[in-house]
Image (cartoon, helix red, strand yellow):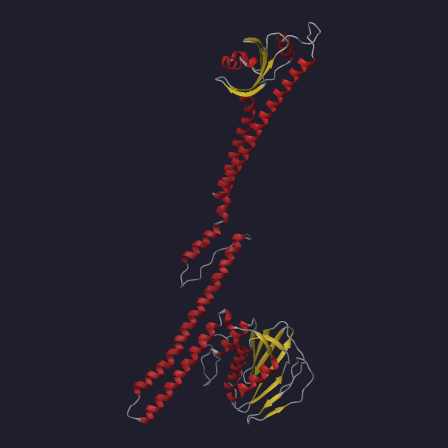
Length: 489
């Protein structure tokens, strides 16, 4: 409807403007014709001769007669001449019969007394005139006046007829535009109506509806974008519901354990009370860790989760090794070191590597080797933790980074199932990824790949640092610089 209204206004404005200027042009043509006749009469009076005497004109009557006899009025033009108060001459059977309009004759009958030429517009009951009255005085003869007039209504009628036709054509075009725009808008806006209806039917428990899309225009692209948004929302809401369900289950378990032991505890038995107290504190610690992990994962969705800055990869790896050693009696070692300055959040990366180290301790035996390393791959930093533990089944490797998911066959080595989710969130916060390479019974290797444009490598090289279970450390000789991986033993 808006398009139709704007089109109608545009057509009306264009037509009205053209009509106005066309009428002005017709009036200008009339004035030009009147001016030419005035110039011709003035020239005849100054240079012409009387046909009867061959001498210059000395009589106003003769000048007016000669002028009217030589002029042939146009279709909508007429002429009359006065000698004093008397209507002396008129045009016959040609042009506009001015003498037959008594209102006009009366209005111009005294123009012979005027001192100057008059050009004016006059409306009578017959028509509207655009006229010129030219007073004539020669010698001592009686003065007179030549009155030349155009039927202005008749001259403008051609313009009116033309724009009447324009109005009919514009109206027909507007009707056609209305039909076409109505049809096109119905087709183009169908996805928007479907979008509105779909949005109205969406609830917090049902995000499964989608808009059918069949087109390549902007509206279809909008519908596709809306469908993609619904898909993301559905995935997010499903994950939130799953998180709440899993968190509720995980939190109910220690609560149930503590409650059951408190109900069965014998307050009079000091040993039973001490055992129950120890169990309650242990379960409360587990609930506290679970709550902390959930808060951390929630914060991972916020923009300020990662604070990047220049980080020395060698110092980062040494710090992680020092922090990881108390986690378990293992043979800790750094198998490859990238001596470079990368743009990372060193605290979050340390947190991720320590989580991987804690997992490696949990799923490996005492005395086995856990290795750490770093390397450069183009603009990416690779950081890894590898163990010689039980490994991960292939069918579990794609699931273990989900919240509350644990690898099957872990036996008594249980946890909240949020550790690897935290590692994945830290990697995603850097715009990177975390991957696992494992076979059951042959350990696992977790690798963080973090993009870090503008890596600086002042003196690249690799050291191998081995920490035995008895906490003794041996520094291997510095090897040739480069981000390649050394063999592991």
